[in-house]
Structure formats: C-alpha cells, structure tokens
Image (cartoon, rainbow, N blue to C red):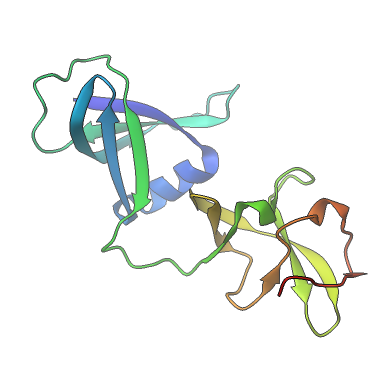
Length: 163
C-alpha cells in the first residue's frame, strides 16, 4: 500500500538528498491505534505550479492492518531518525526567520562587539515544533533576533533585552 503527499520544495530537497535521515510514519483517523512506518519510494520531478510543492510517494513497511482501505486519509509525520548522524546545523525559533521580505529566507544576527544587527540569508531545514533547522548560513555561537526583526535595517545599532 502506498501514500502520496505533497512537500514544499525545501523539504522535498532535504528528503530527496538524505532519505535515511528521517523516520516517517502514518496514522489513519479511520483506523485508531494503527501506526504504519513508511519509506520513500519516488519523487515527482515537476512542482505543482500553483502550490509549488512536489509529490512524494511513500510505501508502508511491515504488517498492514486489515481495516486499512485504499483511499483512506492519513496523517504523515516526519522526524529526524534517531540513528542518523546529526547534520551540521543550528536550530532557531521559527519567529527568528524572515521569509517575507526577500526571495530567500533570512535571519538577523546581533553582533555583540558592535551592538549592530545584520541580515543574513539562510537555507532552512525541517521545522521541529516552534523551532526550525538552519542548514546553512549560521554558526552555533551567534545571537539571532527572534522578534521585531521587521523593524530593523542593516548595521542598525540596537539595545538587547532579555539576555
């Protein structure tokens, strides 16, 4: 039995480049108590023109519950696999990511020595609750602005509160 889901381009790219780095499971509202482990089977090579998503086909592994029928809806959850090597990335609050003002997502960095902020483009990974993985563009020891960044401009001097 197979499932087809649509993933945003950023997530599709990550899933395609490192499929073993994720644990994927499905639950079915019509089949309470049944959780099905999934594996990636195939990727659509063309994006949906309207939604800018890619269809990904997943297959159920292991035993299939006899109550499960073709066409049923499923809730699919994707998590970083416990045995996967942790990626060289940084996790920041979702509120720190500016996805509105440029073509690439960016994050504002606070430089302690100068007291100024600068915008930096980043490459995002998977969201985890209220946080998101930043795959490229940040080091682990930088301070990021997590609120009010829409009022900032490059090299602006700011006062930090709540450190």
